[in-house]
Length: 478
Image 1 (tube, one colour):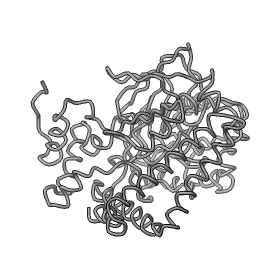
Image 2 (image 1 turned 120 degrees about the horizontal axis):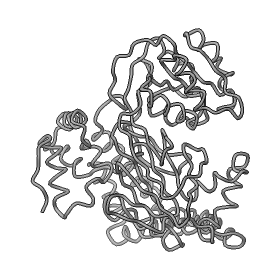
Image 3 (image 1 turned 180 degrees about the horizontal axis):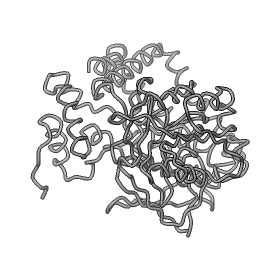
């Protein structure tokens, strides 16, 4: 709270009220012009793309030069640094404390562990880290995935032959296919992060730089119960993306030239006849005119794009994270700089959490990027969460899982903590009690904007009573 106050006082002391307002306005204008430039560069070709690129570069540089010439550059840098410090410490204060992404349980050593390894995944991590030899030394039966083989069929065959643990050394797409078979037969599932990104392994607390360490779970492991996401009948462990990103991934040239393919196809997808025109339905709430939609297995702390999303604080909340983008012109791109007006919603960006999401379009089918793999599903596509559907076996000793980053700080709760009106221990206790009862925790409610649609006043009373007084029934809202 002191850092937040100082970030506002520094420009006031250095330049006075009027000049401070003018410098803040200049900074916001620079950000808005940068957003317009980025939009032109992505949504157009030719002259407009060149102008957009130039604007995206020159606008922030011009603001910095203006600050420097007026002697305000150090003031702006110090104010921004204090604000970042305030946000970082606020998130630390509100964090529910160290712990895993899901509740742990004891696990017996498997008798017939089976592991599928993709030797091409991650640039050849299977061979580079000698995973085949190490898995066999741990007592696993190893199957190397050949090009064109059916991953699901291989996993089902392993179950029929008596495998009591299914493991995958590969990317998230392969992980999801085997995880579905493991969940169906209620068998433990082991993740070996041998892919390119392995976001699922990261959120499980595994070391992506040392894939072989995950094999320790075979002989000395604990078990987690985590959620799975479904897009129609397809399982995803990370996310399912609709709209622009899914269409770009569908291009055959994307694998070999990602940036070039995206720049070539985005103009038609954002402003041309190929624009997807998605619609989303959550309960009674409908949103249309969407260009991109990301549905994740548990909410992300932030979502930059579908290929490099943020971290998930938990994998057992029983909720899907939803991020929608709706920007059709440069004016709307500039307005996104203002950020959400309330909760997690703004004109161009919508964030929420739900147990089920329906994605609709004007076409009979929808291209979907499921954990980075392109599929085509019949429209509408119903996405849902399957709480606790997957038993995941992880090493007993593994790196601590970092908390999700990028979520907005809840400043009223921070103020209550600073003034001694709310105990961190009480907050953690009620979070644990919520998980025991199978209801959304206070942290989940605040992080997801779960109560943003409640009647005026009821949302504040609900969340304040939930975190400060413990879990108790409340009167039905009129």
